[in-house]
Image (cartoon, rainbow, N blue to C red; front, side, top):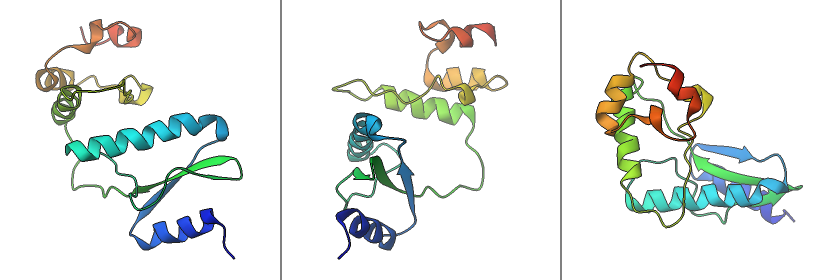
Length: 141
């Protein structure tokens, strides 16, 4: 007889293209649960977000690893502009949040130099002066 995790895995793949994310260890369980809650909340608000597979109880823990199942995002015909990304972040930050949700705007691969002006125009403010963004203060001024 298959385990609950095996049944969940088979079920997830029958619902369409799915990305399976496997966390490194049980220590990440709280963070993974938070990701699932934030994704579901943003989806309920109508915000364009990567959606978890809703008809599964998530996350599941398999051999000590929290596992989640997400709908695949199909790549569009072009990459979004930094102005478009700024508009999405502006919309995200305009939502009323009950608890703090960090979305990774300071991630090292989120650097933008050539189109930063378009981002600022759409987002509505310059992030370079924000506390906690020291690496952003060294470029673009």
